[in-house]
Length: 300
Image (cartoon, rainbow, N blue to C red; front, side):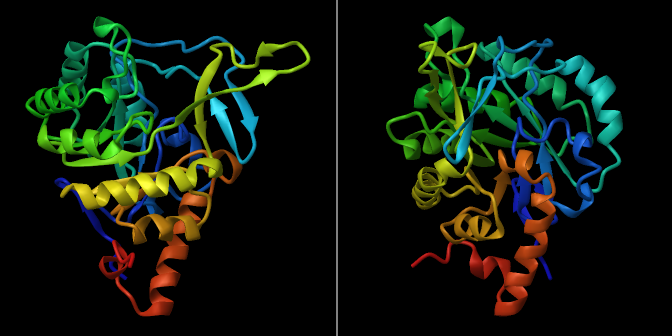
């Protein structure tokens, strides 16, 4: 069965991907599933220089989900290209490198650096970080900035460029349209919702950073609605993220218009979930004598 999906210039063998920050650098999951069976994986977010992340505690379980405040800990671009890529370059699956910065110039420079590696199939630009030169507001909250930054990054890379959008905005359709206007090949959504948790006995915040990103099944209805709205509002492919924990969830996102999905928090619960969803998708389509193209966007 043909499960291929094309995102920009990149063809993935199937639409099942894994989300940044939930799958390490890829190789950590080799003992749990056949990485070559899935469409691809997103690395944890890469910054120009190494980053140690936020103070502990950094994860707390919530009702049907989790809050994380890892703080985008990573090894930095130099170590990633020299030490990590050699370990994953021979995998027969898509490699998407998520990247982030706190200043516009650093986004551009980082895209240039990562684009020197031929094995990287796509770049995913994380716009949920605060813009330190603009008072700390998130890059992803400003449509004009999204369009300008996307255009600037697209000008320095020949990689497929995916723009990862934050749900913490008034209207995600507007930010998606800005990314499209800037030349993005695709948008991925949603990133985590912002939340917090407290210890009522000590009356203190549980997370060391006080706030964190909410993910897991709890956010699926929000994500599904935003993916559906966005798929209708733009012409470039939408990658759906948010609360996917089963093949049924995958189907829901594809039906409302996503061309691919990224599985996130559930990798911590069932590290084989991505491969299971590939197998489940093939069975579902075979049983219904339906093609993937017929399934995508079939909501009535």
